[in-house]
Length: 507
View 1 (cartoon, rainbow, N blue to C red):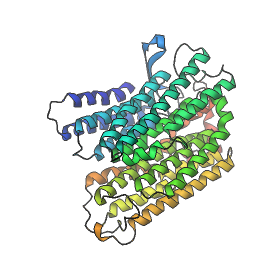
View 2: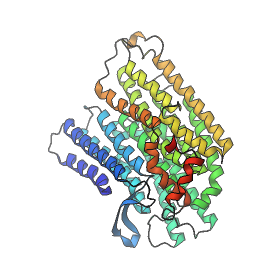
View 3: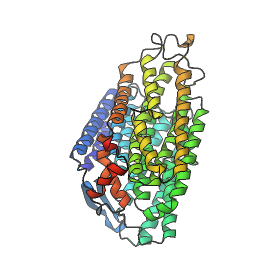
View 4: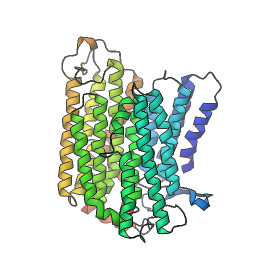
């Protein structure tokens, strides 16, 4: 069942590749859209079949592959991966739908999008360390070409910078995994939460540090963040949607799965330093966003700040904060995708993203009133206004982290206030005031540009009002992750969480 999510986009990419020439963009687009719609439906069906009371892997597939290398094809789904798998399918469909029908070299473009989706979902499902590494590296290649070919004026520089940083991240992950397996004496690279238990704490700290830097590059955290703004600014809008909405989550997912999950003892020692690192990323990202004039770069720096919340929650490692990491990943994925889509529409209609140039776009007659209204909703969600998913995720992160790291949590809460500052600056300068003459006759926004944003807005509000619909998928798995032994955790461990940590299931 899980291999279908990996194999379907790969087979569709092959089908697009072998279509007879000349092939217009509509054929490849139709195949890609249908493929991702099927994948999305399949992911949701897996969610309905998912037993939320189990802590072990579900729908598991385990096939022998290269046994001498310790590499087996082992896939599994749990409450940590399931929301991200659904998010990946949804945002890939939205990215394809939002692509300009007249995109150049459509055959190659849609092939790369589909291969990117397969690599990401494979990484989320892999439960063999080497298999995860292979999928992690697989997504690097399509994304590099998507930026390098369909990006902006400095696309070559941005794509190369992304490639170097991400390749270094992959090398460090491989070094960390090899060190863990060889030092522990394991005879395979199967994911096992007990791998590091026999190692001295010093060795655990070294291996954990390697993985923290590796995933810190991918998230990205300060000071490994410099590739992200360049990549976002030069990437096309659909690629930015995937980059912010899905690709960054590989880093936060790896942080939880392979950091907290494999090295709980070393994690506890490093936790206070990780919380401080989170504060630095949150405040740096927020203050830098305030200084930006380019709308897209501002949203890009906001991603750095919001990823810091996930590190804070993971460092605290309480049941509520850990559940908050999943909410923050999904919330940021939806909200950042919405903001990038709207910025893309503004750029296509006005030809600029400079907030010092744009004015009055909320004008109901000659401006972009619907886009402006949705932008206000996205800004409110990102700033953590109640009723939106952003509020729920940040509330869980801060409530779950405060008892462990009160000072760091309060400083990160300052970052939330700064989020409101820079995003309100964006909205106030760009959408209010008098519409300049140069923008007096803006082209109409087609429904093709409206539908993806409306879908994301609906989900942001829906999960903001009903967070329990997402929480029930992940609560049991994340509690087991904190215990450190998924098979030893029992549903009884979940019972006191609702009362003592204000589980969102009760909200």
